[in-house]
Length: 328
Image (tube, rainbow, N blue to C red; front, side):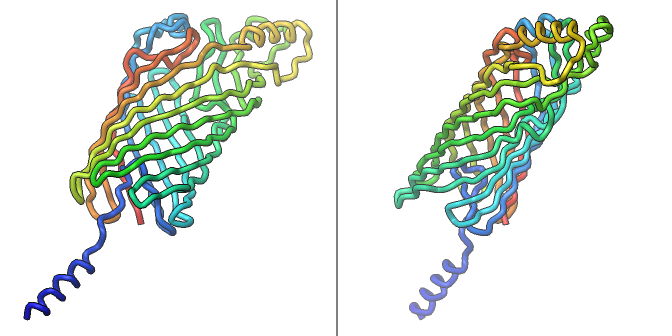
């Protein structure tokens, strides 16, 4: 009788499914053939800082709310140690009439090291998809005004991610470098200027050759799994956004007076002095509804320092949202 009972208990343990992989874990890696999707919808509040660019537009100290943000992270495991992944994000800020894709990347991640004591090292490389959309904006007496969030440039991200798991606690860090390549994938509305000087032969729209940039990001994460259903995470991330710069005029202008004026404008934009640095702290709590579905609530607060001509500097920048995670 005792032997039969032991066999029944053993069989029930073997039949119990393993805890579902937690997509909120910063070291999550899909297994071979596993597809995952993380869809986030957030609401952001911003208060513009007192940069020269904001002052010139009379926008310093202005509140921007609501700012709607959507992000999709997805991927599929090729093997248990190699996966294809992508990330896409969209922002709509009606207060400054600026909207569009603000983030896009697609690439491979490889689990290069995985030890018996749960230390892992991942290496990844992604294509930067800033060139999918043209950079659009307008140049007026108050300076440059962005219409979207694209820099119009293609590029490449390379990075490493590493960490360790102690029972229910996981800690990790990452560092990555982004190189963008200069291009003329942009459209700048100069109709306000050309209307004032029609004899100069300046078209209503021009394109310029932008310089390449090098940027760096790094971050730290902590994650705790309370039980099969509940978990929480915290993180810190640093993003360096380099100054943009204009190399030359891409649009041909026949009128020599127009050429001279355009060249003067280009010279003034050789170093746009519009870079900024972000320091982002985040918290999240997640509930595993079943083996395939997870819901997380998250919050982020961003501290930043911006150069004089940056339109991205803020005194307040906060976001809250919900994330739906699927894996199958």
